[in-house]
Amino acid sequence: MAGRETMRRNSLYWWEFCQAPTAIDFMQSRQFPKDYKDELFVALFGAAYQKGRAIKGKKIVKIRLNEGTTGISSYDEFVTYTGEGPASPCGLSFGPDGLYFTDLHGEKDGLTKMPSGNIFRVTSR
Image (spheres, rainbow, N blue to C red):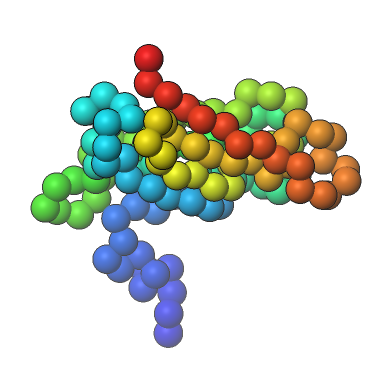
């Protein structure tokens, strides 16, 4: 019988609460300082149509995996939504000039349930 522990076998990390990861990418070029190289970036969506800030989701986290072992050595919030609307990240990818990410709802009231998102770019200073 498959259970909670069976699902966790061979996993590197488990979120304690549902965060709804929607996209991942590794930083492998020179978009950010070399300390970020090979770190995993994960878009966490959270609850659909939830307005404003949230404890679960609505952020992009940066995760450093342990080399040669299992698990992670650091987990940090990289981008956190601070607006009033229902926006949540749903896609991300590194481009030649930074990290691009999309949101699904944008800053609309969230009542239309029609996609109206944005594309954002994060660059290093």
